[in-house]
Image 1 (tube, rainbow, N blue to C red):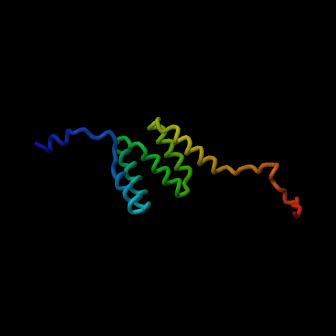
Image 2 (image 1 turned 120 degrees about the vertical axis):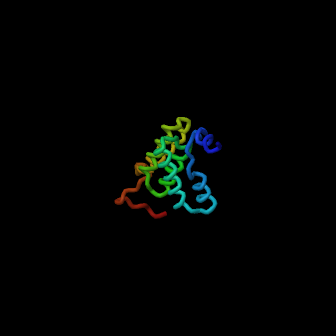
Image 3 (image 1 turned 120 degrees about the horizontal axis):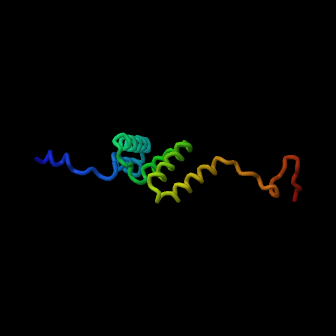
Length: 123
């Protein structure tokens, strides 16, 4: 009888998968390779089963991608987080803006820039 009733139990609002394990691996065992796999698997399984990815998981995976140098994918995951959880809009916009600014090279200030042909006078 218990098996029959447990099949009717409501599923949680979110699909957490191995997210908790990924946090443990990253912060306790200091192993980001397993974290990458846990996060990717959690996101993939949630999407395949039409379940909601928990708040912060897309952002967490995006940040992991950013730390590995994959800025375009990081922005894509920050955008997913922002779309699914509008309350994260301010933070996600700030992170996206920061990544986009890093891609730009700052223009030199014309007052302080020294042209190669100019020589500085000795003191």
